Length: 115
Length: 113
Image (tube, rainbow over all chains, first blue to last red; front, side, top):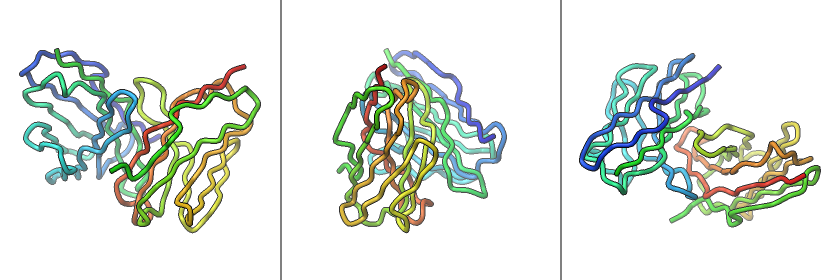
Protein backbone atom coordinates (compact mmCIF):
# COMPACT_ATOMS: atom_id res chain seq x y z
CA UNK A 1 0.00 0.00 0.00
CA UNK A 2 0.80 3.73 0.03
CA UNK A 3 2.00 4.02 -3.54
CA UNK A 4 2.61 7.38 -5.17
CA UNK A 5 3.18 7.70 -8.88
CA UNK A 6 4.46 10.53 -11.03
CA UNK A 7 4.05 11.19 -14.70
CA UNK A 8 6.05 11.69 -16.77
CA UNK A 9 9.22 10.18 -15.37
CA UNK A 10 11.35 12.21 -17.76
CA UNK A 11 10.52 15.19 -19.92
CA UNK A 12 12.53 17.42 -22.23
CA UNK A 13 11.08 20.73 -23.27
CA UNK A 14 12.21 23.85 -25.04
CA UNK A 15 12.90 27.07 -23.22
CA UNK A 16 9.78 29.20 -22.91
CA UNK A 17 7.30 26.35 -22.96
CA UNK A 18 5.28 25.00 -20.03
CA UNK A 19 5.42 21.52 -18.59
CA UNK A 20 2.90 19.75 -16.36
CA UNK A 21 3.91 17.02 -13.93
CA UNK A 22 1.30 14.80 -12.29
CA UNK A 23 1.47 13.22 -8.87
CA UNK A 24 -1.06 10.55 -7.93
CA UNK A 25 -1.71 8.57 -4.79
CA UNK A 26 -2.76 5.18 -6.12
CA UNK A 27 -4.20 3.41 -3.10
CA UNK A 28 -4.99 6.08 -0.55
CA UNK A 29 -6.51 9.51 -0.32
CA UNK A 30 -3.87 12.17 0.03
CA UNK A 31 -5.06 15.13 2.01
CA UNK A 32 -1.68 16.81 1.68
CA UNK A 33 0.86 16.63 -1.10
CA UNK A 34 4.34 18.11 -1.17
CA UNK A 35 6.53 19.10 -4.07
CA UNK A 36 10.32 18.95 -3.81
CA UNK A 37 13.13 19.80 -6.16
CA UNK A 38 16.54 18.19 -6.14
CA UNK A 39 19.52 19.54 -8.02
CA UNK A 40 22.42 17.16 -8.73
CA UNK A 41 24.27 16.11 -5.60
CA UNK A 42 22.13 18.38 -3.46
CA UNK A 43 19.41 17.98 -0.91
CA UNK A 44 15.70 17.71 -1.56
CA UNK A 45 14.28 21.20 -1.18
CA UNK A 46 10.62 21.64 -0.38
CA UNK A 47 8.94 23.90 -2.91
CA UNK A 48 5.35 23.91 -1.75
CA UNK A 49 2.70 22.16 0.28
CA UNK A 50 -0.77 21.65 -1.12
CA UNK A 51 -3.97 20.58 0.56
CA UNK A 52 -6.87 19.27 -1.47
CA UNK A 53 -9.20 22.03 -2.52
CA UNK A 54 -7.12 24.93 -1.29
CA UNK A 55 -4.26 27.05 -2.53
CA UNK A 56 -0.75 25.76 -2.16
CA UNK A 57 1.64 27.18 0.40
CA UNK A 58 4.95 28.05 -1.20
CA UNK A 59 8.33 28.09 0.48
CA UNK A 60 10.34 31.26 0.58
CA UNK A 61 12.06 31.95 -2.70
CA UNK A 62 9.77 29.78 -4.81
CA UNK A 63 7.84 31.75 -7.43
CA UNK A 64 4.21 30.75 -7.22
CA UNK A 65 3.43 32.24 -10.63
CA UNK A 66 6.14 30.13 -12.20
CA UNK A 67 5.43 26.87 -10.40
CA UNK A 68 1.67 26.42 -10.50
CA UNK A 69 0.33 23.76 -8.17
CA UNK A 70 -3.17 22.36 -8.34
CA UNK A 71 -4.57 19.79 -5.91
CA UNK A 72 -8.04 19.32 -7.28
CA UNK A 73 -8.76 15.88 -5.88
CA UNK A 74 -7.65 13.65 -3.03
CA UNK A 75 -5.56 11.55 -5.38
CA UNK A 76 -4.05 14.04 -7.81
CA UNK A 77 -1.81 17.07 -7.60
CA UNK A 78 -0.15 18.75 -10.56
CA UNK A 79 2.89 20.97 -10.83
CA UNK A 80 3.12 23.16 -13.92
CA UNK A 81 6.43 24.81 -14.69
CA UNK A 82 5.51 27.84 -16.76
CA UNK A 83 7.85 29.49 -19.23
CA UNK A 84 10.56 27.00 -18.39
CA UNK A 85 14.21 28.02 -18.55
CA UNK A 86 17.35 25.86 -18.51
CA UNK A 87 17.91 26.71 -14.83
CA UNK A 88 14.59 24.97 -14.07
CA UNK A 89 16.14 21.70 -15.16
CA UNK A 90 16.01 19.51 -12.08
CA UNK A 91 14.55 16.40 -10.51
CA UNK A 92 11.05 17.07 -9.17
CA UNK A 93 9.65 14.75 -6.53
CA UNK A 94 6.23 14.73 -4.93
CA UNK A 95 5.11 13.12 -1.72
CA UNK A 96 1.75 12.57 -0.13
CA UNK A 97 0.32 11.98 3.31
CA UNK A 98 -2.85 10.12 4.15
CA UNK A 99 -5.48 11.53 6.43
CA UNK A 100 -4.61 9.22 9.29
CA UNK A 101 -0.87 9.69 9.23
CA UNK A 102 1.72 12.34 8.66
CA UNK A 103 4.20 9.92 7.15
CA UNK A 104 5.15 11.08 3.67
CA UNK A 105 5.14 8.60 0.79
CA UNK A 106 7.35 9.70 -2.07
CA UNK A 107 6.82 9.37 -5.78
CA UNK A 108 9.58 8.17 -8.10
CA UNK A 109 10.37 11.67 -9.34
CA UNK A 110 10.33 13.45 -12.68
CA UNK A 111 13.47 14.61 -14.40
CA UNK A 112 12.92 17.84 -16.28
CA UNK A 113 15.44 19.00 -18.85
CA UNK A 114 14.91 22.40 -20.45
CA UNK A 115 16.90 23.02 -23.61
CA UNK B 1 21.05 28.25 5.95
CA UNK B 2 21.37 24.48 6.02
CA UNK B 3 19.51 23.37 9.13
CA UNK B 4 20.27 19.70 8.58
CA UNK B 5 23.79 18.73 7.59
CA UNK B 6 25.44 15.53 6.53
CA UNK B 7 29.11 16.39 6.48
CA UNK B 8 30.29 13.22 4.80
CA UNK B 9 29.27 13.22 1.16
CA UNK B 10 30.41 9.65 0.71
CA UNK B 11 31.28 6.53 2.68
CA UNK B 12 32.79 3.26 1.56
CA UNK B 13 32.39 0.15 3.70
CA UNK B 14 33.23 -3.50 3.23
CA UNK B 15 30.39 -5.99 3.15
CA UNK B 16 29.63 -7.38 6.58
CA UNK B 17 31.04 -4.40 8.41
CA UNK B 18 29.17 -1.61 10.12
CA UNK B 19 28.17 1.52 8.22
CA UNK B 20 27.74 4.66 10.30
CA UNK B 21 26.11 7.67 8.70
CA UNK B 22 26.02 10.93 10.59
CA UNK B 23 23.70 13.90 10.62
CA UNK B 24 23.75 17.18 12.52
CA UNK B 25 20.99 19.72 12.94
CA UNK B 26 20.82 23.26 14.23
CA UNK B 27 17.13 23.90 14.91
CA UNK B 28 16.21 22.96 18.46
CA UNK B 29 12.53 22.85 17.46
CA UNK B 30 13.11 19.63 15.51
CA UNK B 31 11.65 16.73 17.44
CA UNK B 32 11.22 14.01 14.84
CA UNK B 33 13.95 12.60 12.63
CA UNK B 34 13.89 10.23 9.69
CA UNK B 35 16.33 8.43 7.45
CA UNK B 36 15.60 7.80 3.80
CA UNK B 37 17.39 5.72 1.20
CA UNK B 38 17.48 6.94 -2.36
CA UNK B 39 18.61 5.43 -5.65
CA UNK B 40 19.40 7.64 -8.65
CA UNK B 41 16.33 8.86 -10.54
CA UNK B 42 14.00 7.45 -7.90
CA UNK B 43 12.11 8.92 -4.97
CA UNK B 44 13.34 8.41 -1.39
CA UNK B 45 12.15 5.36 0.50
CA UNK B 46 11.62 5.54 4.23
CA UNK B 47 14.01 3.54 6.41
CA UNK B 48 13.62 4.40 10.05
CA UNK B 49 12.60 7.28 12.28
CA UNK B 50 13.07 8.44 15.84
CA UNK B 51 11.21 10.80 18.10
CA UNK B 52 13.08 13.17 20.37
CA UNK B 53 11.68 11.39 23.41
CA UNK B 54 13.91 8.44 22.54
CA UNK B 55 17.63 8.14 22.03
CA UNK B 56 17.63 4.90 20.08
CA UNK B 57 15.39 3.06 17.68
CA UNK B 58 16.08 -0.29 16.04
CA UNK B 59 14.61 -2.00 13.04
CA UNK B 60 16.43 -5.10 11.88
CA UNK B 61 19.87 -4.15 10.62
CA UNK B 62 19.15 -0.45 11.02
CA UNK B 63 19.57 1.49 14.24
CA UNK B 64 19.22 5.23 14.66
CA UNK B 65 20.79 7.02 17.60
CA UNK B 66 19.82 10.51 18.71
CA UNK B 67 21.93 12.78 20.88
CA UNK B 68 19.74 15.79 21.58
CA UNK B 69 22.32 17.75 23.53
CA UNK B 70 24.76 17.50 20.63
CA UNK B 71 21.99 17.90 18.03
CA UNK B 72 23.37 14.83 16.32
CA UNK B 73 21.92 11.62 15.00
CA UNK B 74 23.46 8.65 13.34
CA UNK B 75 22.30 5.65 11.36
CA UNK B 76 24.04 2.34 11.92
CA UNK B 77 23.71 -0.47 9.40
CA UNK B 78 24.94 -3.84 10.59
CA UNK B 79 25.93 -5.93 8.75
CA UNK B 80 26.30 -3.84 5.62
CA UNK B 81 25.27 -5.48 2.36
CA UNK B 82 26.02 -4.52 -1.26
CA UNK B 83 22.31 -3.80 -1.73
CA UNK B 84 22.63 -1.04 0.85
CA UNK B 85 24.66 1.01 -1.64
CA UNK B 86 22.63 4.17 -2.21
CA UNK B 87 22.38 7.77 -1.08
CA UNK B 88 21.08 8.20 2.45
CA UNK B 89 19.28 11.34 3.54
CA UNK B 90 18.43 12.33 7.06
CA UNK B 91 15.44 14.59 7.53
CA UNK B 92 14.06 16.52 10.45
CA UNK B 93 10.66 17.84 11.36
CA UNK B 94 9.11 19.85 14.15
CA UNK B 95 5.77 19.48 15.97
CA UNK B 96 6.04 15.76 16.39
CA UNK B 97 6.65 15.17 12.72
CA UNK B 98 3.62 17.06 11.48
CA UNK B 99 5.71 19.98 10.23
CA UNK B 100 7.50 19.99 6.89
CA UNK B 101 10.56 17.83 6.38
CA UNK B 102 13.97 19.46 6.14
CA UNK B 103 16.44 17.21 4.36
CA UNK B 104 20.19 16.93 4.75
CA UNK B 105 22.51 16.92 1.78
CA UNK B 106 22.89 13.17 1.65
CA UNK B 107 25.69 10.64 2.05
CA UNK B 108 26.50 8.21 -0.70
CA UNK B 109 27.18 4.79 0.78
CA UNK B 110 29.06 2.20 -1.19
CA UNK B 111 29.30 -1.31 0.20
CA UNK B 112 31.93 -3.38 -1.54
CA UNK B 113 32.40 -7.16 -1.36
